[in-house]
Length: 203
Image (tube, rainbow, N blue to C red):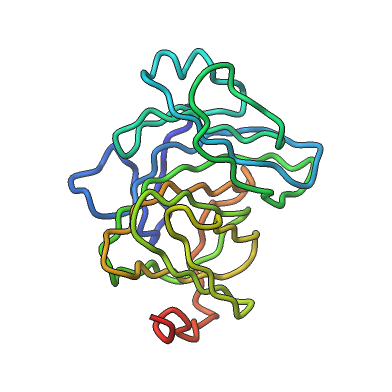
């Protein structure tokens, strides 16, 4: 398994260094190889034990523990199904470059309301699955998206600068995927874009 490595200046840290609940914690960063199609899906399936999940894991899957559950996270086409497990979510389509090597970085994000992540960009699409609270995301194309439990998935294409803020009154709890090009760092901080404050203006 690839080691979870923090990017200099990135607020996310390897889960092995975790000393508190609040923060952004890297659970895994595993190569998933090349794809022949220009889009893929992120499948989230829950399992009773890590052993059962490992038995179902394919070459594009990773088993992680987050928010009190054992998960099998798999990057595949839309019709992929696990042999066992309980399907929880299917997030996509995620736009990618066919023939490029990708890795799946998975993180657990625990933010208190009002916490922000600095402006940054990813070398592949980012998506997240909301477990609790709400997140407002402003991107450099002038759009704003809200991620909340039961709401539509938030998906950000490669190359868009982004700034996110935990909003509302509850703790923001999300499982985050960055499906990044393996040859590139997953996250790069940006200093040439200033958010307009769309999230503040609307909340």
